[in-house]
Image 1 (cartoon, rainbow, N blue to C red):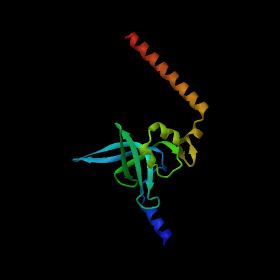
Image 2 (cartoon, rainbow, N blue to C red; image 1 turned 60 degrees about the vertical axis):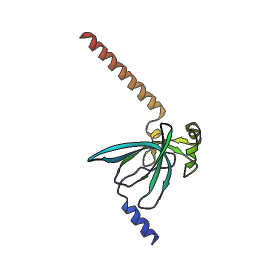
Image 3 (cartoon, rainbow, N blue to C red; image 1 turned 30 degrees about the vertical axis):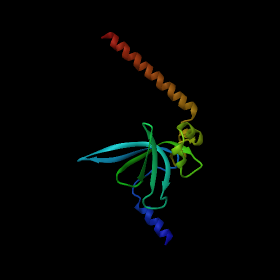
Image 4 (cartoon, rainbow, N blue to C red; image 1 turned 90 degrees about the horizontal axis):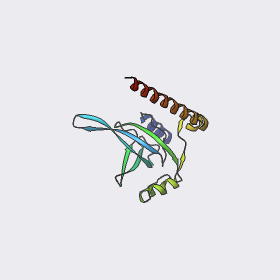
Length: 160
């Protein structure tokens, strides 16, 4: 019976949601209906709690500080109002629920949570795809091309 219930709950999950953990910084794109119009609103913050792991409707609590006031929103992951969830930064925390973050400053939180590389898929990390040396080469090449484009633009404006 227990396995049947878990299979049923997993079958109810319709969207692909990235793997989230406590401490991750995410952007949640949600649909807002105002009058007859629909728009997308972005809420960016830190995941402080996840509930309902094996249920058909798990929720995630995301917290941000806006103009000095802490704002927390509980999002049902598989709601049709959630357009997509994007993981910006992944951290490793020692706790599953980060409710202590409410009383701490941002500086202390950075010390508590260690940053981890983002996973691209199938266990590959961002650092695996772009090692430091190639990243530096890519940045230097990009700056050289940008400088050459600026020089070309300045010579074109000088001719006119």
